[in-house]
Amino acid sequence: MKKIINNFFTALTFMSRIPVKLKEVSELKLNYFPLVGLLLAVIIIISEYFLSYIFAVKIRALLLLMIYIYLTGALHLDGLGDFADGFFAGRDKEKTIKIMHDSNSGIFALVTLILTLALKYLLFKELLLRENIQAIIIMAVLIRYILGYVVIFIEPAESSMLGGALSKSAEVI
Image (cartoon, rainbow, N blue to C red; front, side):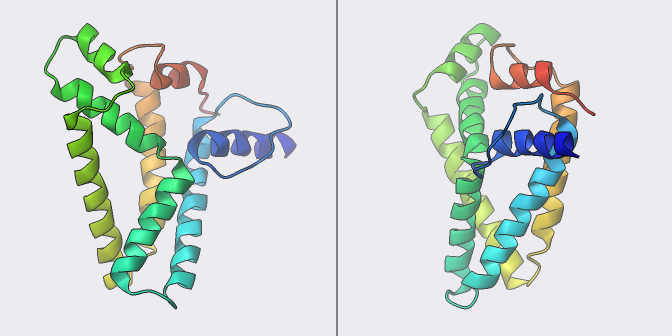
C-alpha cells in the first residue's frame, strides 16, 4: 500500500503543483495519470461549489480556469506554446527542435495560447451555464488516460525533451 501511495504521489508531483512530500522518488507510472486527473477535477468542482455563492458565471469560469492553470503549473501550456512555435515555423526537423527549445515565445505560441485559453474559458462557462460541471471529471480523467497512450505509442521528436525522458522512464504497471 505504501508503494502505491508513493507511486501516486510521484505522478501527482509530475502533473501538478499540489505539494506532497515524497519519502522516495519512484518511477513514474502511467496508470496513475487518470487518478491525478480525478483529483484535479474534484478540486475544481469543490472550488466551483464555493465560488458559486459569491460570483456570477463569467467570473467563476475565469477563476476556475486560473485555478486549473495554477494546479497544473501551466506545464501543458508551456509545451503547447513550444510545439506551436516549432510546428508552425515550417522548418526542417532540426530547426523545429531548436525553435522548440528556445526560451523565448514566438507569435505562433502567443496566438495558440490565447486561442486555447479563450476556448477553455468558454468551455468552463458553458459547463457552468448548463449546470454540468461534473463533465470536468470525465475530461480530466480521459485526457490523462489518453496521455498515457501517447507516451507509450508516439515517438518524441527528441529524446532529451520532457516527452522523451518521460517515455523512457514511464512504466504502465
